[in-house]
Length: 314
Length: 262
Image 1 (cartoon, one colour):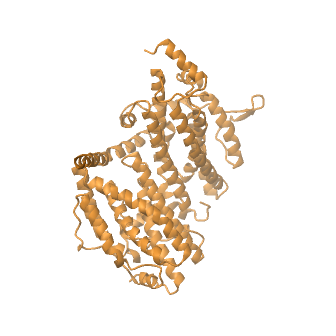
Image 2 (tube, chains in turn purple, yellow):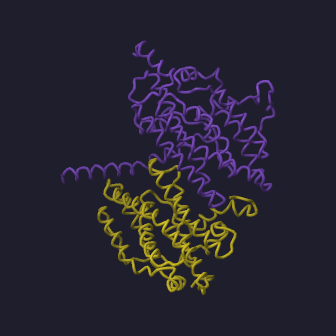
Image 3 (cartoon, one colour):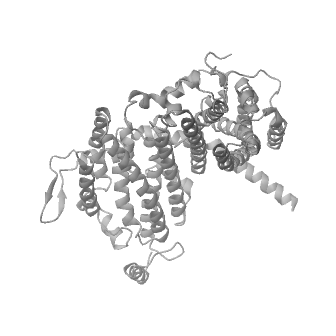
């Protein structure tokens, strides 16, 4: 059990704004929450490669093909250092991976929606990465050192992705009638799922208070969501895209944009595994993992043989 | 003899042909490797394969851009998106389906080994500054592709029984497509005369030595060098796989050719 004195001392460090490092004492519950959040973040980066990877071979110019390939590569990189960051908490990457492939671990539900047209790629860059940046900018101030630093690095790359997505979407919104149709349709489909990325309302979010107390998060789900909506309304208007919410209204008093009801039934359904692409995404990831097993085994066996040879030689 | 090829007469025509041949190989192979994105055997390899694909497509794009400048075409996309399979000059080795990881590694290894020697020789003789600058820049990345794929040939060949068998099958299957790496036609002969290309026979032995040494170190058998070799792709006589690859790659761009997509 964590003693009250130690807990008090830990809380004091958090309140002083100190970073917690891997070798520092931390409450078991803090460790568990971080493993959950960091590994979910890592899984999301990896599953997120699939909807975007869907358009690499069909990207409409060499420039866009390279931009997309580089973006997907960045996501593999984010996954890699998030897993490494999670390993500082005393867990193994392989166990974490198997936990989402065959167990109960979650990844961001946004990736359970299909990318139907190339405009979806632009909208993922603009909205989905835009939402991720709002979240990760906050997480860059997280109390856990390795997670905070990972988010600083991720945010830099995500900002670049968002800019690329927004620029191309602006071109489509200002392009031929077909491009305009694709652009608006993609926004219509991704808008509400993107708002769900921030998680349930604060009143329905059991972990929030604890995460904020420990400085893992510094803002609530609803605060982050509002910040995002306020920005996106302006950005959508600037490129002539409509957001699919008739209830969007500016509140002069609060200085915020008020928005309609988020379809939470859909959110919980997708979280529980019943979304348009949940089964396919998991199938694709399991297939890659299982078909890659002989490759990973070969690398291990080769390394073992080399070690034996080196030992004999010395 | 190809239906469409005309033998280049001027130095510029020979340069364009050379650029397109190099670029087509790299675009098509890069495209195939990019199919791994999100499906690699481990995260590190997702990164490495995406990196190699990105390099190859980047090399192709730079070469096309120069060709477009010389020919007065709109841009690099003209060559990638608006030509049919019989116009593509890549060798069949590059267009074969993705295959398993062993096939992917065997293909990158054989192609990069060839590119390594080719670029080394080209850098020595090509006088055109812009072309030579590209070759030098891309050569650095080719060295990485060669090193990375060579390390995996060793791991797979000398790893487990399964990986050994898969690597052996991959080299056996791909071998009949390696002949085209060295084939020279009349277009190449003109380029060689104009110091824009080199006689591939000049480095065939070096290539063979590096390949054979690597396969032996990996405890793999070297496939029969005298076997039947596929040929004709440089003249547009491809396998059936290229058409489908292009159908996928080009569909959006060709569906809306007047739209801005850059």
